[in-house]
Image 1 (tube, one colour):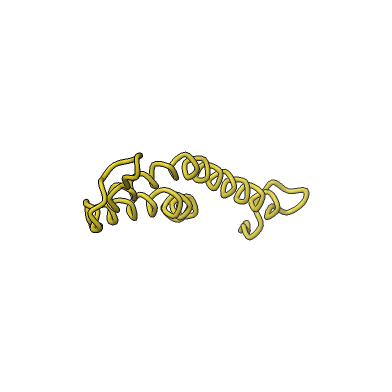
Image 2 (cartoon, helix red, strand yellow; image 1 turned 60 degrees about the horizontal axis):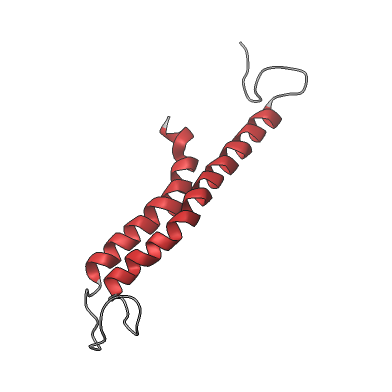
Length: 101
């Protein structure tokens, strides 16, 4: 069963899990203050600290990564359905490679 889910897990791992883990690791490892003494926050010449900027970028990427993951799973399902259809021998309902004894 895991073998049949592997393509879906790869797509979702690359498009959902990897970015989420990257944001979490960077948020925990980057400084939560500005080193150059600049004010913290948004607007009026202030900038976000690096840890908060990573979270903001992750939030901005999420609306694009969610449909990309769903689209990737749809492509995997389409390719698998097409392969199953073409692997069946013409005129029979058996899959190719299945022999009867």
